[in-house]
Length: 183
Image (cartoon, rainbow, N blue to C red; front, side, top):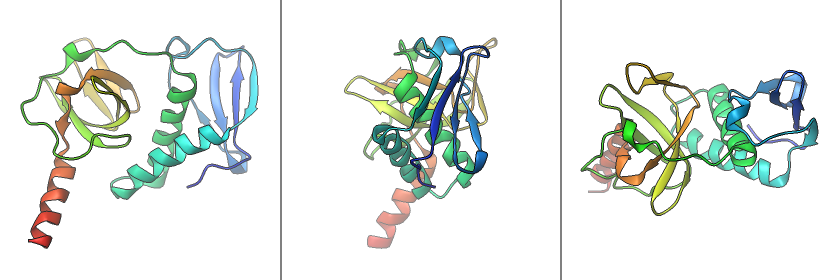
């Protein structure tokens, strides 16, 4: 999947709905509440080069894992692009997640897979933004229970301290297999 010059951002103020109009009449509706996004006016604008690069970078990294079908990859990459362009900065919510003693032994960059553990459940996430102290991660599991009253849904994002990032079991197995092949 590649971003197209024909893709357009659309924000309907009546329904308070942001969407991306794709090729062939397909429309991707933003799954985030407007409170999670910057204030918006009516919008009908082309995808910019920066939007296309943001989409493509995330799509390509996730597709290399060969874990998901192209539709889920497209949704994840579009949602990351929505958050990059229109998302409000988030405050960290590290308290929902366990600290970990084993840090990932691979590069933590955009698209890297990590796991977060709420003490109730472990789930797979992809990094959508990272700095020296925090990482913003997108939930790739269908959902994750954080507490008795709070649950994350697929494509929700959360900002956490880096010490909450646990290695992805998938990447650990893949790295171990590569190491054995080269030994």
